[in-house]
Image 1 (cartoon, rainbow, N blue to C red):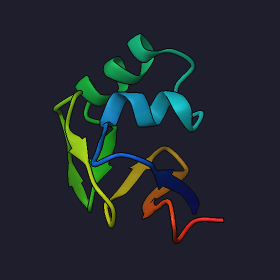
Image 2 (image 1 turned 180 degrees about the horizontal axis):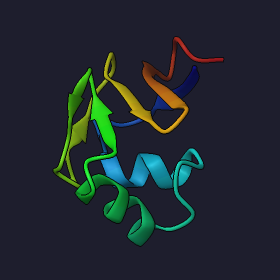
Image 3 (image 1 turned 180 degrees about the vertical axis):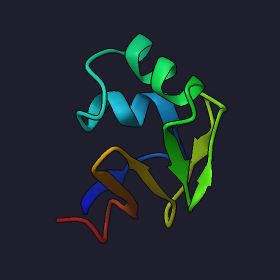
Image 4 (image 1 turned 90 degrees about the horizontal axis):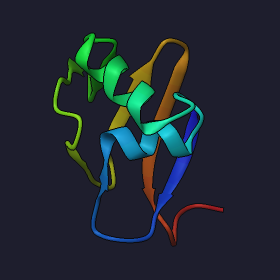
Length: 74
């Protein structure tokens, strides 16, 4: 599992996928989400700008990303 250190209150789902390598571009990330290939906390998520918070887990084709507080991350 990849751990993403959240610096603010939240991050949009498509931005997380782009930053962590699940997608090359924001457009590709949005297409993956629209296709129903992304889950958040075990549920298929179709909202591209879904606000992710500390404790959320995102999965996409072999990627698993956990959102952690910046203080908890390395």
